[in-house]
Length: 151
Image 1 (tube, rainbow, N blue to C red):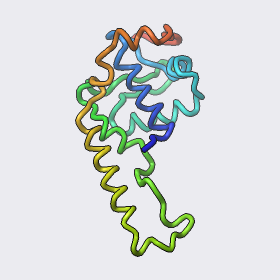
Image 2 (tube, rainbow, N blue to C red; image 1 turned 90 degrees about the horizontal axis):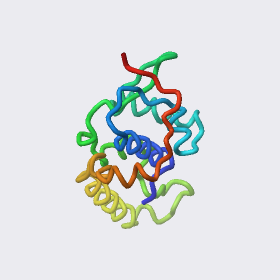
Image 3 (cartoon, helix red, strand yellow; image 1 turned 180 degrees about the vertical axis):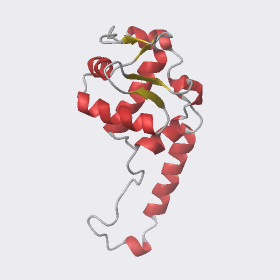
């Protein structure tokens, strides 16, 4: 199963935030955009979604930005993928219409596979995938641009 780029970039954004040393400044769209070479529009949509879903605390306005809304240990990967993925259906038997659908066993088997995939992700948190902070941080540029102090 392949995750959409949307989910991939959402996870990368959270990983980036989780590996940063504790800081008193909010993260900015421009920072994530620079680090991962992504479109600001795309990052804005992801950050907005993560904020609405409770993964990020967002602050609007000129002095705005965002930060993790809960500890990395409390962010479950399975729940995160379920939230960000538009569909977890591995196939669509309706497009084009498949004549075998009424008797096909494949869709049930694939549903079991997706359940197993999600069950594995359910065992891990954001903290687990960001546990090697030093190694991950060494791969990232210093992109703390346009940041503001939380006074």
